[in-house]
Length: 526
Length: 34
Image (cartoon, rainbow over all chains, first blue to last red; front, side):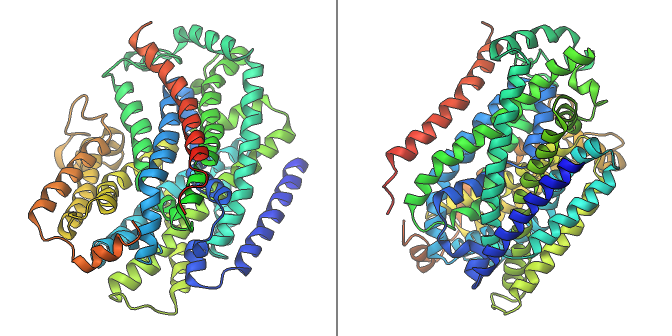
């Protein structure tokens, strides 16, 4: 306990000091929302990385790796190739240039101004405001599970206390405060994850030995998982089996592709002053992702070996089926108490850096996208910062309600849900807006609406893990899902993203192009 | 090697390769973009 109090106080003191530094330098709206568009590449890469990789990745997806094995290494690959290289080079450069040309301050504002549509900006803001809390609560559940295991306090108490700490931190200061602290938080995460990775493999007898011993654990995998297609921790699941569809479409592709439509990440590209800074950010961000998610996923799988060596059971059995508790229990059981305290502070850093960026995007969605654009028809008001904070408070309450009502073991699922929703709704409109001058306002509106509603339709009526939970399908049709295998295990994004893409392309050919003046302005730097 | 083993092996290999690719891209374009 003494370790925890000491490390937490040191961490909070540094965080508050850095927040204050950022707060002092926040003068204009552009400073508040985009850190003045003058961010250093290393700061950009660490802040992007620590926003992207949160406690959800370490706790939620680390737990999923413990359950499904090294198949999850494909997500680490997509996190780097799609989440860094494609996102920065294909999307980031044009986002930065177009954002500057259109004087856009938020992701919905970029889309709205590119297509000259207040509806697109307002509706995108609405989606962020009402659905991002699923992701913010997943992040808070992760750290609350760790506090629950480590301090033996009830989950609800842990959740409420940490939400309160986070809320105080976020409401104060703009993006500059968030950027400064996320660099510090990102640095802590890298160091601690590297230590966890090295010590885990050392305890397991080295890389080769660990992987060899994992092969022998295949025999004791629970029968239910084997029936559903699990083929061991170092084998891919059986092609076409329920486990295969779930791992590939929800956890790997859902997050791997959905990252391209994440508003709180895309706004980061608009904080840089030139493409040179963006080019220089790429290596640091890729390394950061490798050293955080790559290690978290590998450690997740190796926990099975550690639990089997000491308790003769697999990780999933040690936590009675709650995957969100695997990493917390592993750290608590196999590391000295002073290190457990440091790991908790690391999770605190991961949660605060990701949550602060999300709450920031949520607040901006209410003030800039919904209030100023959709309700006041583009009239700028002096109360923007106050309304942003109202948005943050609203999202904190939404997070609180969701966090306390979502069932156990849903961190990775809730994360994949939000990533998939953003991918289906925003990616076609975003991509074509950056690259295709023929892309029309009508097509963009239709694509966003189609992506959004088809994703929700599949979630409510087909994807069994959510449709069963929501109960709407059972209420209307007397069964949990309208589709048999494999439709009940295919992620909604796999259905909704192609549909919204097709709608966009077809309608663009048959509807009136965006006004020439708007296009000229949008593409002026490209 | 079974096809599923090859897929797992690819997952192992592609992660560091993509990181190396990103580092190389950053170095080759270090002064470009102004």
